[in-house]
Every structure is written in structure tokens, then in C-alpha cells.
Length: 444
Image 1 (cartoon, rainbow, N blue to C red):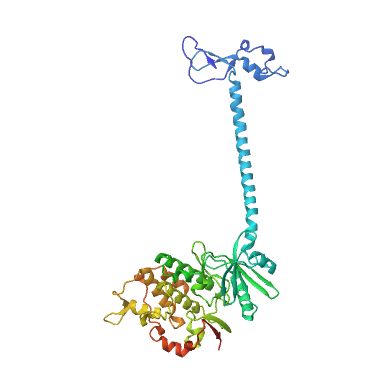
Image 2 (spheres, rainbow, N blue to C red):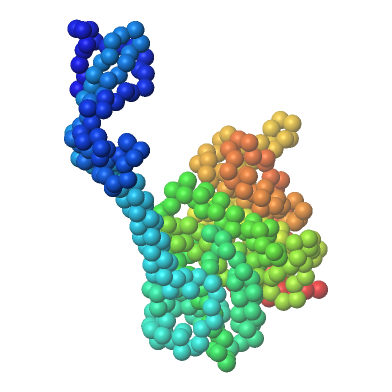
């Protein structure tokens, strides 16, 4: 817009309504502003030609201005951008969301074939042969059968336990599928599938590349740091606590020992081998065992003789305590080849070294015996777990608290019964007459 000043002064003030001069409009007869015009007139072409109008300002003379749309093209581009850009942004947003959705669908489709093996699935014996490549790579041999390395079609590595034909193996098969098949916990080995094809039975587990815990804690090279041992102990305790309290039914393992603790690629411990496990309602504090096989050295006294108490989840606590003692000493609890006879039985030796009586006959930690805090913590918690009476043993929840606490804050355990009278215990329970590593328990 071009403006002019009338009488040498620039107009200013409040604007009044525009007054169009008739002679200022180009060809006013064809102008669309006239009411008597009925022709189809291009308004923008008239505006582009321009027109003049007079603007009266309050207190001033008329100011004349010339109006035109010289910047019509630029204005059109701006209007076009304002209209098109939001549409383009919206289309881009919709296209991006569509791409993300298709990408997710594609990822899910790639994911599902591998995940079909994450829930217990029934396999035919022909599938077992294919998975193990005709039983080519044997991982180990157990009391219930052989274990082979295998690979599922999706590339998932597994361990296949091929069971024998004995009745006990049939019982183990039922126990494994009914217990571990319902368990989903980071510290419990996962059952991928099973096979029951005539007399052929097999159990398929997730593959644990680092094997079992026993080959590390009994290694003279001390592969694990003290902090790592504590971490492993805490994770095992979490797994057992989940079995006892985290499932719909209470699951008692009845065979906690280093060999049944498997380690994944990150050395995360996972409880395995549920062949002896039993299911009980959570409110049952006392359970019955008709027939069970457990490993000597980890078996709770009450499982052998009811004179020590009733069988309950505290039996697993005892076995876990014996495991903690071996982790603390980095040796087996019973070592007949020990240089000193007092060191033959580690729990007895470590108790006598750790504990002393003050002048008031109050139990206290010995100041003359120095070991790492991690070994001291594992030993104290382990000694609590292996108390002869089940009622004196802590729950797994309490054990977790103790393992995560400072050594100075831990309550000191009473002396386990057999720490000084191990010979009497073995003679009274008949353990001295047993040479096998496993014991068959028959309920009374």
C-alpha cells in the first residue's frame, strides 16, 4: 500500500470507515462492489490493478491511499504452505505410524517361531532324535538317565534328559512336568518341553552353558569372587523362596545341592532337577513323604527320622544351609583327607573358629579368627539353616534378609547338635552304615 500526506502532514489517529472514490475504481460499472452488477467478475484481477481510496482521520484532512495486491503470488505461496504443510505433516505422521506398526508385526512374526518353545510342549520321540542330532553330544549322566545337548528348529539350545524305563523315572517324569512346568522364575530352570512316546520319556530344559555350581566352588583356583558368591547365594535363596511361597501350590524340592544349581551365560544360578519335588497346599506346614531319594550330606535329619521333627519346607532350608557352608569353605562339608581331624567336617570346624564365649558365657564372634566377611556371612546364615530342629531354622524370606545384611548385625546361631557329636548322630540315625550317595526314605 502506498500512502500520501495531505497538506504536508502525515495523517495519524483513529481510522474511520473507508470512503471509496468512484473515479478511483477501474471501470466501476464492472466492479463487483456495485449492487446492480450481475456479471461474473474476477475480483482478484481488479484488485491486482489497484484502486485508490480516501481515509478520513479524526482531526485531520483526508489521506488518500492506493491499494493493490502486488504481492499476490507471495501471499498465495504462503497460504498454500499453510494449507499444505499441516497436511504433509499429518500424512508423514500417519505413514510413520503405519511403518512402525508393520515393523512390530514383522518383529512379532520373527519372534513367535522361537517363542513357541518357551512353554512346555509335547514332542514325539522322533523330534527328540532330531533335536539331539541322534544323541550326538552328551552333557552328562545322572541317576535317572543321560543328558544331551540339543537345538530346537528356531535355533534355541536345550538340554535333553533322556529317562530310563524304571518306575522311579516314571515318577520323576510326572514330578518334573507337574512342578517345573508351572514355574516361571529367573532362578528356576525352565522346562521347554517333554516327550512321552510309549516307553520313551524325555525332558527338555533350557540350556545352561556354564554347567553346575559344584565345579566352581570346589575348584582350587577360586574362580568366583567373594561378592559373586554372595550374589549367587542370594539368587538361589530367591528361587527357593519362590518355590515355597510364590506359586499357587507349595513346591518342596527335596534335593537342593550344588550339582542341581545350574549357571547360565551370565552365571545366574537356576535351580534344577525337580525329580524329587512334591506339591502341597501353601497352608500345609507338615507334609508326608511316602518314598523319596535324597543325597546324603544335604538331607535334613527329620527326613531320616521323625524324632527330629516333622517334614516341611524347612527340609529345603536345611539342604540350602549345607550348600551355603560349602560355598563359604569352597570345599565339601565332609573331607576325610583333611590334614587336621578337626577340619574333616567343615560346619563343626567353622563354628568352633567363629564363635567364642565372653566372660559371661555369652556367645560372640571370635576376634582371633579372621576370614573374609563374605565367608563369615555365608557361614553364620548356613549354621542357622542347619539347626537340628526344623523350628529353629529361619524361613527363606528371613534368610534373604540375613544374606543382604551386614555381618555385625547378624544374630549368632546356637551350636548345631551334630557339630561336636557327629559320630553319635550318624550312629543313632544309621548313616554310618550307608555307603551310597543317595538314601531311600520310607515314611513311618
